[in-house]
Length: 444
Image (cartoon, rainbow, N blue to C red; front, top):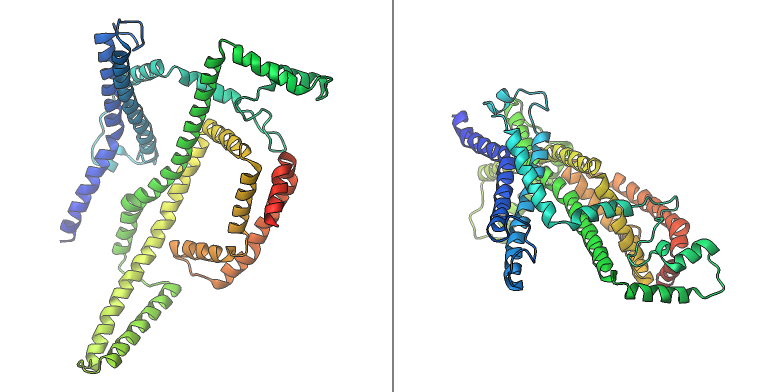
């Protein structure tokens, strides 16, 4: 009887497992089909060449139509290619052979070997087609790598973060480097001549477009990586808790012949709920005197039913706490894995954040500083810390110790406030003195 109850769950799990295992091949096949659609347009209308104006005598509207069609197919191919890489990396993490198990025993059957030659050929065709239609991408990536200069000891980048500040290529920059910041001629004159030279340069428009493409690519890569850092751990936590950790914990708890005992703090809360229910019944009895009164046996029966419901509820909360611990560990492992394999993306995000922060006005910087300090170390911050710590304790099934919470609130915000003031004095006062002055004025 027990096996028949769990058969639908097992069949669903096996079907989901097969669907996950086939995701890389399915995503790669879909990306390959989109690339073949682009190849069909090239072979039929552009003699097998890249869709560019001048190959055929087409009007601008016809060319734009083919270009839009190819762009749509290319976007779908990129999405499917990203799905292929993500699912392939996930399957590597959950591969039974990598964990020391036999694939035959883990899945109940032997997986067919992948045709490496066909897979590599499809990937080569996809990469070649994407590279032909995204020609600025390699140069943008290399430019991003070249522009990601390390920060000095004071936390300031050795190169300017703005796109139009290139002192090494301008007359004023050479003047600053050679004369040590002093000159008999006002520097604004050199800047004016340099701006006129750039405006009259026939390649100025191309340089502006390249700078714009570089900035757009950097912003897109930073935003995409930040979304990955947020979404992947959350998905790892949810999926592992639902399909891996949850079933394992429930199975272990069901296999245990001993009775499940609640932890002391959960038992205390359950007793409070049960006492509240008894008081509710007595209140109903006093406020409705015309209703038939419950006998002692009926009252005891209702109390037993309510106690059983409360026990099941709090037993589920205890199981959820155990599931959260293991699911959070897997989410942290996924987060660390992303950071360890994305050094270039981390450097791009760091440069993007530096440019974003240092591009703010002094009043905006002061506003953000005051908002941050008032939220975490301000007068009303203890209430937020208390709610946060209580939520973390409930998440992991720990007792909500008031002594620990008050001790944490009395020490950690003070330490955080000291570190923040030291950062303002040590770094921000040197990088942007006007922002510090604005902050002090607004804070007063």
